[in-house]
Length: 579
Image (cartoon, rainbow, N blue to C red; front, side):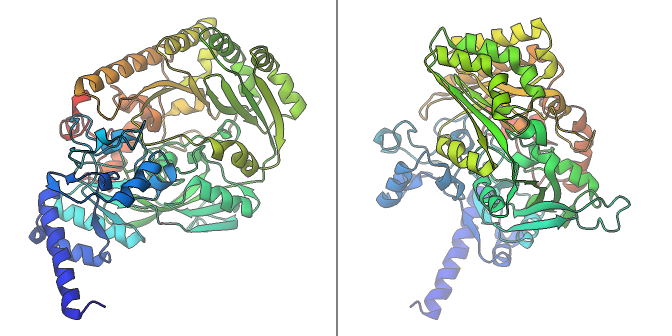
């Protein structure tokens, strides 16, 4: 048992440590904003954020530290496991979010191809990289309120970290205080939900089946919860993505989006703490400007979402087609030619899904098994002619499909991967020239050693109300999301990194040429897109900027190429070498 005097000494030591770390890492003194009082206000939950792989290193930021063999072994064994990272305040899925890409020595990474390789961590300094200096585990709205007060007083920038799925580094940031929302885990089913304040609204609408979730609830958790209530929650493919975070706030696509819309079409209420320190309800009847901004304006921008409420569907019956074969240098492009030339027909039949190389997994709630087999006859025949297989089966619920085909195919993480996608509109498929341009791009991908990855997620059949959401209007005419990507090794040089990004820029430019007037889904876009305001938000950027200025005039939230970001901000970022 610790004596009273020893307990006081321990608390005093922690306070002194926190203050000294704040002065060193954040550049703020206790006197400036009374850091101790802030920490006390939030229950002592402000903690230094140390790199995920630190237990394997013997030197941290130039200071000798003890290697923690047990913790290191756990990290090495689970380095590519998204569940461990999602549940850790320092766990990010992609290494470019952790490292300072512009300074190769400023990182703390293992070799993703072999996390036990001692070359990565022996006689190597673990540096903070692009990670926040501190984090606060958000347990209730008042925590975010106090954090914004502290940020306003100190000038410290905040970042918001949920599950850590992020290609653009928006949920981290060197020198920031991270607000970690993963443990906001409430889940409530509503047999009849009406947005708060809408009883007196001039157009109150009808109560609908809905689910309210805390900001930290991931898709695997809400899918199970929805299934237990015999309803369908529409969301993404990756089990560990947060259902209320950047996915939702940027657009959020599903393989059922062609018929049932994007995530922003289905959310009907947010509870959010805005940077002015106010806890607000945003829906169609109150704070409508904020509601519109949160439905597409991007995560980490307009406030800390505490919970969101989503319209759900009854249990859905749909057909799934799983078609695959082993590809080689000659048989992949003929497969893609069949896909390209059938895309318009398939879109009219409600098909959505993913194509990854020579594998196609598509679903539609509009056809029977027999109709589906007829619809896909050409591509089924081709796959079988290449020694492949085709399965077309009926599912009585989304959850049954999810458990059979999604959970077993989780993407490995702990790597550096930059996406570079573009939305491909219906118009491209309507002309011979457009289809040829697509095939030329797919051929270019193959020549560079890449396989096509195509989410077929455009909400082409969804009955959208014009201007009801703030994501790029290009979504409303899109059928595909298509792109390329790039990666680099943990020990790559700056020259190699710059070459990789230059290649990504060239591919993005080619995609833009063959999809004129379209846009991109910023969560999965090239982070270095030149005309990012136009590409990611189009005509909605300026009204979004006005809303940003209303709620966050001091840019307490200022993530990479988010609404209100300035080109000059790149100079002080970990992406400065690529801008």
